[in-house]
Amino acid sequence: MPAPPRRPARPQQPRPPVRPRKRGWALRVATTLSVVVLAAAGIGHAVVTGLDDKIARVDPFKDMKNRPEAGHGMNVLLVGTDGRDRISEEERRAYRLGGAPCHCTDTMMIVHISADRGRASVVSLPRDSYAEVPAHTDRATGKKRPAHPIKLNAAYAEGGPPLTVRTVEHMTKVKIDHYVEVDFTSFMRTVDVLGGVRICTAQPLKDSYTGLDLAAGTHDLDGGQALQYVRSRHADGSSDLGRMKRQQRFMAALMAQATSSGVLLNPIKFRDVTRAVLGSVRADKEFGTGELIDLGRAMRNLTPASSEFTTVPIGRMGHVVEGLGSTLQWDAAKSRRLFKALRDDRPLAPYRTRGKRALVEVAPQQIRVQVENGTTVAGLGGQVDRQLAATGFRTTRTPVNAGRTDVRRTVVVHDPRWDRSARSLATALPGAELREAPGQGPVLRVIAGADFKEVRKVRAEDPDRGEFGVVTGDEVTCP
Image 1 (cartoon, rainbow, N blue to C red):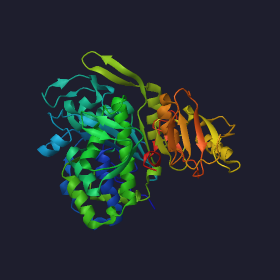
Image 2 (image 1 turned 120 degrees about the horizontal axis):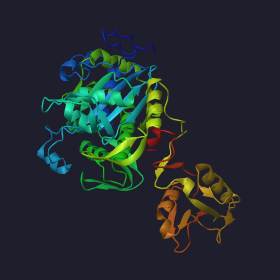
Image 3 (image 1 turned 90 degrees about the vertical axis):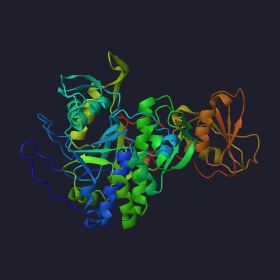
Image 4 (image 1 turned 30 degrees about the horizontal axis):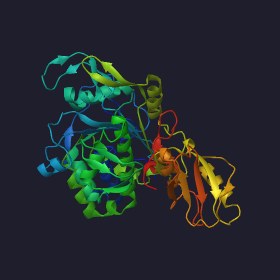
């Protein structure tokens, strides 16, 4: 499909050759504008006409000078704020949304749409990143402030969208083409209109601050539960970095839900989605109906497999700055290479994993396995050993016969101290029974039974993903 026509250049700031607009917040923005954009691709101008009037406008590029050069493709700064003015009291209590909003950004990411519209690259920017804002006028006091250190999410509180864009451009040298801002309300409403979003977790997630309480496994989340999932910072020991990974996983799941279901081609559903979303969206003045339709048409073939997600490389955790507290300091060299790849419109992922893999707590490469044949089927032990090894497990490569030949159900025998490894191994052997053997040690035993069919491919939550830790959307959605 040919790319949409180019937009005339502004007098002082040439627009990049790609103009269309992207979806919403990794969580809220992804859930919102991604739905609207994809719907526009299937429904067309008649349905989206008039949406301009529903979008609140903001001028994030006001009086900006000395901006980075435009690269190839289009870059959208997606900002999720903690606005909760339209949240009901019942929802506040149910989803732990009490307290006063900080008037700062709760989530921030750059979404890059390739020039050929075949790839979306999403880079999360941690809210606690150490940043240096340029000189500006404080929007709360009206006083001029010189350049100074700050946490990235506080740039919004001091100078609103313009200072946020200036700070991100200063740190990344990536020119921002569009700005979209969404709050809690539109996020929750949109997920509900879509009928929920399915996510998977390899381990239980519980956060008393947000009320999140999920067992390991697959869950269909409604809007409120989805908000808990993407907001939780205390569900594991990884704090904000873990939260961003969950946001990216949710964004991929949202894309899969939106593209695989027929909801986006249903005018009534589309109308309901737009009503739920656009009343609480703020976007730059250049984002209009024409951009929405052009981008939607260009992105019809964008799938989870052609989307990639990462977080800006962190060089130093807990970088303490007087007056700011603990911050995250970016890895300067890796960050430069990452953002150069965005400017050059190059893929970030070092490779593509073929086929989906189930999430497990412990990487197969860390699990040692001895395979035993518990049946009369000749060569079954070798077959299981080879398949486990091909999936990454550290098998002995010398399978043996078990002491019995009437095992009907495959068994994973493990020392209780290696229970996480045992659960991960059992995930690769659907239907396998877990059996404890105190004192067995770190090597797990697999007794292959008559029920064995094949080994399921698995991967750890945080596998080695190259220099930038990139995952593609199809790798983090439910298998």
